[in-house]
Amino acid sequence: MEELEEDVFVPPVFYGDLAEIVFSPLDTRGGQLVSLTMVLEVDRQEVLDEVVKKHSMIWDLSLQVLESKSVDDLRDPEKIPVREELKSTINEEP
Image 1 (cartoon, rainbow, N blue to C red):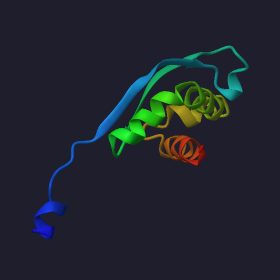
Image 2 (image 1 turned 90 degrees about the vertical axis):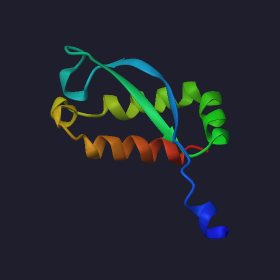
Image 3 (image 1 turned 180 degrees about the vertical axis):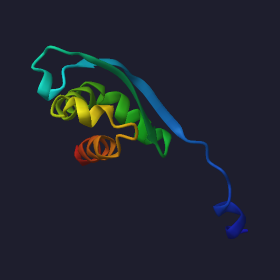
Image 4 (image 1 turned 30 degrees about the vertical axis):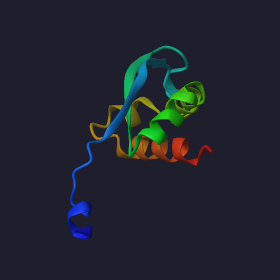
């Protein structure tokens, strides 16, 4: 029975209220704006509830990370370093 319980599919839970974040990349000095929408995947409803409570803080942390990036960093199709830094920054916050 334990083995069957481990194989049960649990659908991912998403937080999609980080829409239309507008910022200026570091190397543009305000001359160029970027708009993006982020969706966070969390592993359970309790985490989603916590993310909802911390929306403003997550928004501000995300802006800090994004504004420190260059246009080239943001044009990278996969943006893995940017994603990893965002994930790390958000996850470090208590």
